[in-house]
Length: 173
Image 1 (tube, rainbow, N blue to C red):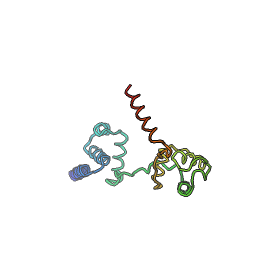
Image 2 (cartoon, rainbow, N blue to C red; image 1 turned 45 degrees about the vertical axis):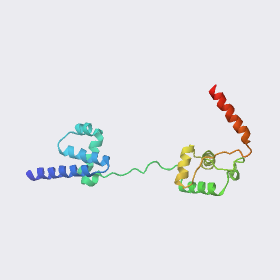
Image 3 (tube, rainbow, N blue to C red; image 1 turned 90 degrees about the vertical axis):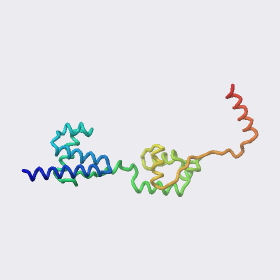
Image 4 (cartoon, helix red, strand yellow; image 1 turned 30 degrees about the vertical axis):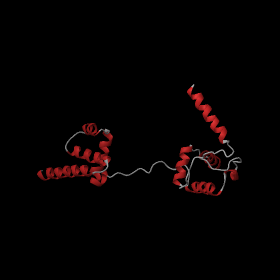
């Protein structure tokens, strides 16, 4: 009986040490949940102390009982699946890098914008994107994106200065 108590005390000390050394707060909570369970706290008390759910405590303790410390290691979720397949992304990359919008049916346009690419993807693949989502794809495909800026080549500098002066005068009134 005393050997079992010593083993439990060693486990508790090991879990305390692991929790102190844990760089990830989620792993620290896992170690603490199991340690508190070994110290005879109820799952409800552990959940309240660590601000996690009863079910989460149960999952951690069960994983520890089945696999030991290794059972507490976290598996990272892969995230949301991509809307476009790798082949579709490659086709998109090829289209943007080798063709102009007017070449693929957007007659008056010469430069690709996120909005135009969204329209092209919807037309080609039937998948709808926001402009922000499309810019994320540009980043993933290592395409640089700059917002277009417009410069009027034939603007009259004298008229522009006159407008600025008149505008300042209107603002003051």
